[in-house]
Image (cartoon, rainbow, N blue to C red):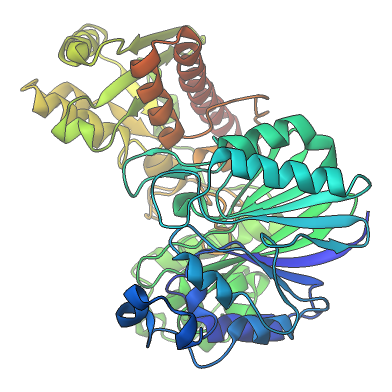
Length: 525
C-alpha cells in the first residue's frame, strides 16, 4: 500500500482556523493530504451571494470569510484537501468545498496510487439539515467499491459507524452512527484501510480498531475555549497516529507541550516552569531550585508531587515513598462498581441500574434493575447488605462518580445515606492521585495530562494496563455512556444478550479494580 501522511480534523465549529494554518505550516513534512470530515464548512470559504437561496440570504449573506481557508490549507499539503459536508449544513453550503486542490469527495471519490478516498456527507439520523438515507450511504460506498476493484478504500464520513465512537449526548445519550456504514465495514473490512469521522463530539480524539479497520473520530467540542483536535496519521502497512491540540491562544511551544504531559501540570504551571528555567521533563525530575517557588502557581507540596511524577516518567517505573496504611488494615474489603444514568440518579425516572460487588477471592454479586419501578427495592437491598456486612468498598474514582450518584439515588427515595457515605476507599483519590504529599506513597509513570485526548491520563483503564492488566477481547461495551445506551435498549427489547453484556462489562470493571488494588499492594511492599 502507498505510504501516506494524512492530517485529519472535523467539526471545527468555533476553533481558530488561522491557528490551524500555523500548525500545518510548522509540521516538519507536508502531509500528502489534509482531510476535513465536516460541519461548519461555511467558516472555511466565501459563497457568492447569487448561490445563496433567497430564504437563507438574511442568515448567511454576511457570515462567510473573505478568503478560501480550504485552499490555504491545501497549499500546505502535497496533493490537496479532501472534505465532506456535515449534518448542520444547508445543502447550498456544500459549494464552499472548492478551490485549487480542494476536493469534495462525496461528489466524486478521489484516487491516489492504490487507494480510493470516498466521502459520506451529512447524517442518516433525524438531527440536522443535510440528511441522507441509509440506502444512499450503502449505495455510495458499494458503487465506489465496485468501480475501484483493485484499490484499498479510505472512507471519510461525517457520521461514525453505528456503535463505534458514535455516542451522542446533546439530545440525549444515544448511538448516532450510520448502520449502513457499520454493515459495509463488517462486510468489506478486507478492502478498507481506515475510516475518518466526526459528528459525535464526545468521542472526538478517540480511535478504535474494528475487524482490522482503524476508525478515527476527529471531532472537536464546540464549547467556548475548547481546543481543536487534529490527528496526524502515518498510513502504510501499519497505521500510526499522533493527536495534537490547538488552543485559541495559539500553538503550544514544544517545551510547554512536553511538560504538560506530567500529571498536575497544566498550561499555567508549564509556562511557570519554563520561566524558572525548566524546559524538559528530565530537568523537572532533577530540579533543585534556589528561586522563590512561592511566586509561581505551586501550592504547598504540589511542586514536590510534580517532581515525583516527573521522576517516575523519566525512569519509566513507579516511585515508592512508603506504604499506604490502608493496605495493612483489617478492613472487610469488597471491590465495587456501579452503572447509572447521571441525570436519572437525581431526577428519575431511574438512576442506578447495576451494582457490582466482588470479594477478595473474586466471588461476584450483581444487582441488576430489570424493571425501573424496582430501583428503590434494589437500593434498599444494597443498604441492608452494607449494614450487615460493614464492608469497605474499594473503587476507582468513586469520590467523583459512584459515591455521589448513589447518594443522589438514595435521597431521591428518602433512603438514609450514612452507610454509603462512609463505606468507600477510592484507589484514585485516596492513593494514586491524592494531591497531598503526606498522603501519597506511590507515583506511577503516567503521561498524557493534556496531550492525549484519547482517554483520561490516569483513568483506571490506563493505570490497569500500565500495571500489567490484559484487556479482554471482543468487549462490545467499553464505557459508562455506552453501558447506559445498552441498558435503554434492554428496557425496549428485553434482550437477554444485552443484559449479559452489561453484567460482563460491570464484572470486568470489578476485576480491573481488584487487579489494580493487588498490584499497588505488591509494589508498596
